[in-house]
Image (cartoon, rainbow, N blue to C red; front, top):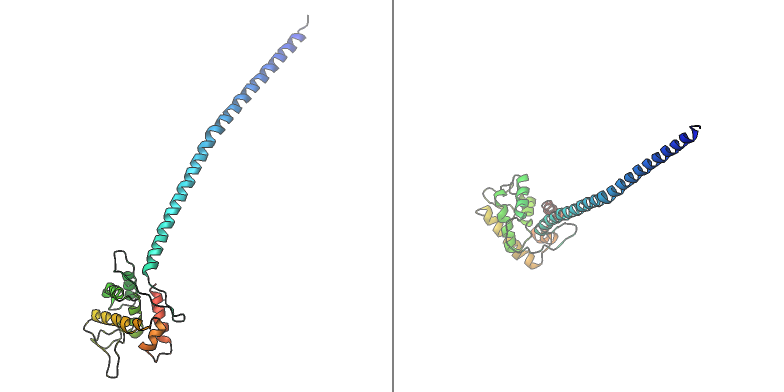
Length: 225
């Protein structure tokens, strides 16, 4: 009797066992992959969705803050006036409240030019509101007329060339009186009588100007936007 048939049977058995092992390994491997896919995929998707929602919410909040700031500054900064395109100067109502940017705009502008009007920045804005003027107008005229009060008759406190006549110019007892008088005068003698643009004001304020007065005042107002 030969051993060959026995050996062939053993080889066949081993081959079957090996195939069974491979099939078993492949089965468990596939099972693990399927389990991992259905477990990890929802988790990853959930984390990604949460991140997108959080980022979107943060962007909306940030944008709303930026827009809010810009809106505050725009509503309190006054009208943009350019000499080449005359625009009506609107009345600005209300009083100066906490957070009003206008006094700081005036204060910084006066500080840049080392003007003696720096301590009166708040008073300039309060008085402009009182008479319904653009808060930049009185400061811009002072810049045009006297380099912000640095070139004026001694002890006159007249930074605006206000009340100039053949015998001289009007004097005030203080800068506060000058600011009050000029602001009230611009309302009563100019805006209330239809001189409601920089160029129209120039025609009465300094009729001999070739247009440079209005151009200068308009430019200075634009610098305070």
